[in-house]
Image 1 (cartoon, protein in one colour):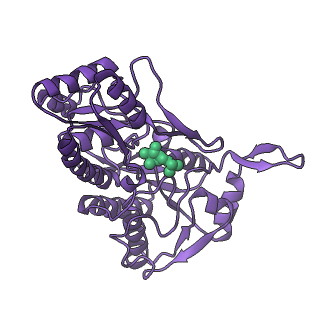
Image 2: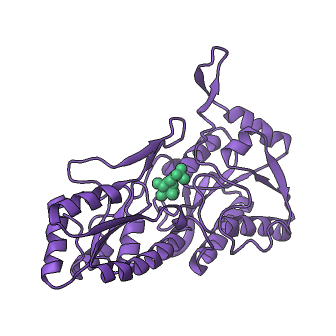
Image 3: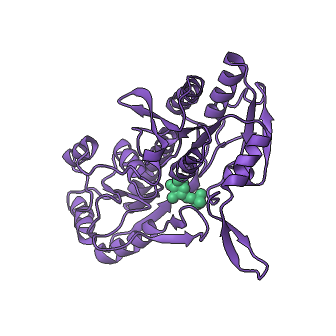
Amino acid sequence: MTGGGDCPGLNAVIRAVTKTAISKYSMEVWGIEDGYQGLIEKRLRPLSYENASHILSIGGTILGSNNTTNPFKYPVRNKAGKVIFKNMSNSCIETLAQKKIDALVLIGGDGTMTSAAGFAKKGLTVIGVPKTIDNDLWGTDVTFGFDTAVTTAAEAIDKLRTTASSHHRVMVVEVMGRYAGWIALHSGVASGADVILIPEIPYRLEKICRFVQQRNNWGKSYSIIVVAEGAKELGGKMVVKKTYAYSPDPIRLGGIADKLAGQIEQATKLEVRSVTLGYIQRGGTPTPYDRVLATSFGYKAMELLVSGVKNRLVVLKNNKLSSVPLSQVAGRTRTVPVNSPLIKAARAVNTCFGD
Ligand code: F6P
């Protein structure tokens, strides 16, 4: 099953799990459609070796995904038309038992893993595989999908640099990442951004304005500001675009680039534009790094299951594949350490973090 927001490399994991299971261990493999929603609605289908062929480099997921369904808190309407929450986990377990399914490989981020830990507690055999462009899953140094998102964002920022330079503008580029600044930090450093704003380091508007103004005084007629969607002003709040009441995480962030662009233009009288990169960061073909990581994770998941290990998340720690208990991962987020070597390196080349 692939759960949560999609990301490049999901198909590479499906391929690795399915091919290893069928050709190395003569197992039968089933795919669950559209994440936990498909499990609740009993939408499962057999996966053959052929189904898993020619999908390594294709973005998205052949199984479909969903980031709004929580099987432990599923909204249904009662007879009076009022929304009440039902725990669907026993019904999901029954569906799997009917199909004689012995183990689940759940490919997802923190929402998927929190429910995975719940299923493990109820006796199911579960192995998690860490995906997300946000790179914010606790327990692993890296998730697959992140490298592709950073590559896409850095390429886009390179393009924005030439137009910003032609027009002597300040360009504010918003990238995804939820409550963590990994994508902003890495794409910003990779593209030589002048200012990088991340949720872990609350910014001061006047610092940013002074910095871009100073660049102008030095004869740099344009500036690139990369801002994580979760960045916030010191003492301020993240900019929320929408809320989905029944989603495991109801909040959808977005809008900080537009807000900042207006504020900087007003304060500096420079010409400022904003761009939100959005879903292109989640789409497209995975980078070779993500294909390799996804294949390694999928293979490791199968090796753990076959050796009798269960209820763990496959992780990459210090460049080595290993695993951690799902119970430790549930409900936690891995954010950027504010004194990380990359932040120190960026500061050394005069990147402003707005603090
Ligand atoms: O977790 C991946 C992610 O793309 C985040 O970076 C972003 O905040 C969120 O999903 C967007 O969610 P949705 O697909 O529901 O708009």
